[in-house]
Image (cartoon, rainbow, N blue to C red; front, side, top):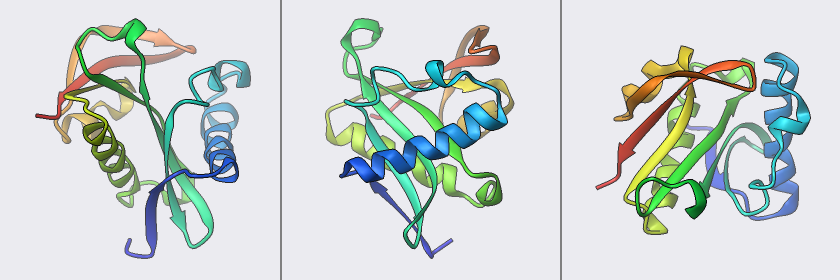
Length: 150
């Protein structure tokens, strides 16, 4: 989709567009409570957004958090969401690539994420490896997955 651009949020208005996509996908579609979807990491996170013209259609975020890292220089990707009409068009992969590139630029050598189990193959195809057993997060089954950026 050459008419879609991926860029990192630079303004509060762009971050709000990312939050609106997440609310649509996670809160309205998947039933995640809003209080659990939005968290304290959002303000410091790097948010990538897919834009069709001026309309935001997908997002994901990148977080560095020393408190829960098991690998030095590990970043965490999360809150990957694409609006229903734009799914299965390659936007998720492009958002993921933008977040990985941002992580590399900030010195990360590894990335971790909690993948909903139904999209495990999406992440596996992009070099992520599942670790451990599935677990519940916000009532949805997830897997811990990691990838080396080296």
